[in-house]
Amino acid sequence: MTIEGFDYKAFVQELSSQTDDFLPAYFYDFQKEYVKDTLLKISLYFGEAIYNYEKSNFSVIQAKIITQIIAEWVFHKSIDLIKSGIPYDYWDGILDSIALSIFKLATQEISRVMPSNNLLQIVEQVVNETYRSSLIELGARNIIDKSILDRALNQSNIDDFMEQS
Image (cartoon, rainbow, N blue to C red; front, side):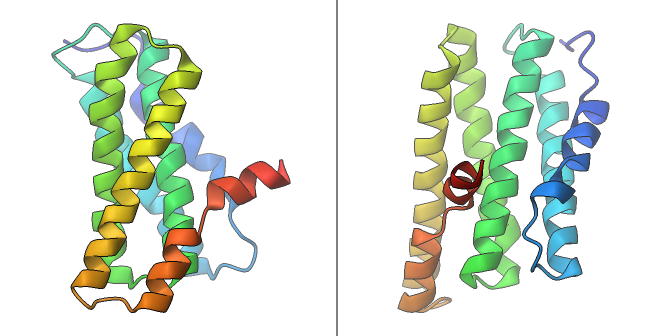
């Protein structure tokens, strides 16, 4: 069942267009493009999945909330990955895992009419757990050393963003 009135493509384009103002100025162009392109790619994928989601009767607002939550976390965690020194080859996998975790949680919980603050808190916990376990796995496989692991685990663009706001 599709969600009538949810133009996920236009919505994701709108979200993507807002990223320029929030990217670190010191990022190289290819890093900025990576963040924007990845946010766009993952958000379109999950926006379409929400649009076609058979198991629920989401309203347009609920669909936008889920899509926006995914987009915002992909944005912040992609910046964390770049800043931390995690090798490029692992960025997509980590971000895909985070987006999938959010999708699973949000599609279950938003249907329960959970207050948005509770949903956001639970999403943040799931994002942090998914991110942490991905990083620990990279460390266990000797892909990253302890200093990169520690830096990545302590990196939080969303906290930096909130302090600046």
